[in-house]
Length: 330
Image (spheres, rainbow, N blue to C red):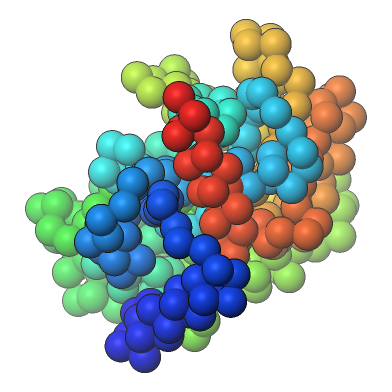
């Protein structure tokens, strides 16, 4: 949908499906992101419209595939999804049903310097996280990432962050993966989507210990805030001690797993929900997906994942349809 050919094919596909299925839609479900071409198209149609939050759709998709009703704890992790506060979400824990959702936890917001440029150049996210926690003092760190930074480019990015120029805030788990991958020297620029995250997963060393990095979980206005300060402090320390990249990657993944299990346990204690749905493109990461599912199961949760419908955005339309259907019944 990012070019004229794709947009044209989109229109042709709609006409084709209407013709061969002999249907005339009366309701359109659409993503809340105002810049998506599909959303702009939907808003031009003279039909009943139902806007659906991106991560709510992810969890509803997993619920639908597994034939679930009622409420669940939904862990939705991906790169980009437009939030109800106008910011870029992507590291979310929801209490969700088809009818509604509540944001129960999310990663702390950090700037996305340059917008889409930060997705293509993960080093920008590493700089953003370091600046978020240390200010410009991180430039004094004796670690390879800082030594190899092009100072002129880094200064531009830091000025963008400081002056809040083209630096929207994000809670994205995908961008956190990018930041860690760049910081430990795996990937500074990408050639395809999620390359840095994929290579970070592939670098995981075989378990040599049960060590895991820590995250700080604090109460916030819209649920718990997952702070990354302890994570980056520990990674920087390990880099200074020349800890192998594979060990850092494993400790990062294990830290994520421990944190989401802990949050799910807290929500179960508070809300009484014992079902957890895992969805979003980050769950294409096999290590994270399988280990989180196993650890949640060991903690007594009923865990539901994707097997027939994609965990990524290819599965969104199923969730959007179920949410729209529930909304039109009210």
